[in-house]
Image 1 (tube, one colour):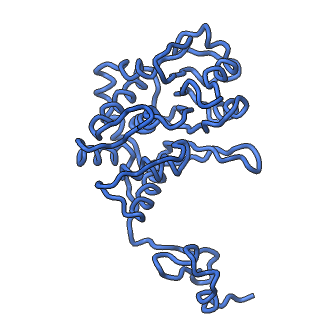
Image 2 (cartoon, rainbow, N blue to C red; image 1 turned 180 degrees about the vertical axis):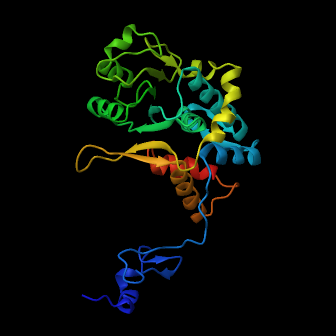
Image 3 (tube, rainbow, N blue to C red; image 1 turned 45 degrees about the horizontal axis):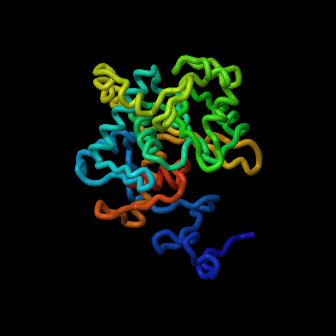
Length: 294
C-alpha cells in the first residue's frame, strides 16, 4: 500500500522525537526502506588515547573525576598519570594489543582507570555485568577468551573472589600471572582491587607500580600505531532471547557515541556530569565517561 508522506507528517503519533530530527521531519527518500538523519557534523576520527591526550593537554589542572564513596578525585593530569601507570603495568605483565581484559566491578575509580589504560595500548576491555553469577561469569570469560581479569572483591551479596576461586580452584596454588585453570583455559592473570592479598592474584596497586622505564617509554609508540576503526571493547547483550552476545565496539563507535550525546545536552567544561548508572554498559562508559572526555 503506498505511503502518503503528507499524511504521515501531520499524524499526531509522529510528532514526537522519533519522527523528527532537529525539528525537521525525517522520512524515507527514493522509496528506500530506511531514513538518514543529520550528517553535516563530521564524525571524530580518533583513537581513545588520542582524544584523551587532547583533553588532558587542554584541561590538565581541572577536575576530571570524583568518586565520593571512595573519597577519591583526579585532575585530568592525575588521571592521565594513573592511566599510564596501569597501562605500563599491563605491559609488564605480558599483555599485548588485542588481548582481552575483563573488568568485573561496580562503579569504582579503578574501573575508570582500567577503561582508559586498556585503550592506551590496544587491549580489548570486556565489560562484565556486576550482577553476574557463577554460570554467567564462566560464559563471559570463556566466550571471548579473557587473558586477564580485573575484579572487585565483592559487590552487595556477590562474593566475586569466591566465585573466581570456585571456577578456578587452581588459583589457590598458582603463581600470580601464571594461572592454569581447567574451566578457564584462556585466563592467566587476575588482578584484585583493595589492599588485601589473595592467593594467585595481583593487587591493583601493585600493578600500578610494577612497570619500569621500558614499559613507560613504549606507551606513546603503541598508542600512535592504533587505528580508530580497531576493536577496543566488548559489551554483552542482556541475553533476553538466548545466550548473551558479545558486541564488539571500536574507538570510533565509543568516541562518537559519547561526543554526540554530550553535544546534544550542551555539556561544557564548566559542567559536572553525575553518572549513577553502571559503567559496564554504553550509558555509563560511552555516553558518560567518554562523553566527558570528548
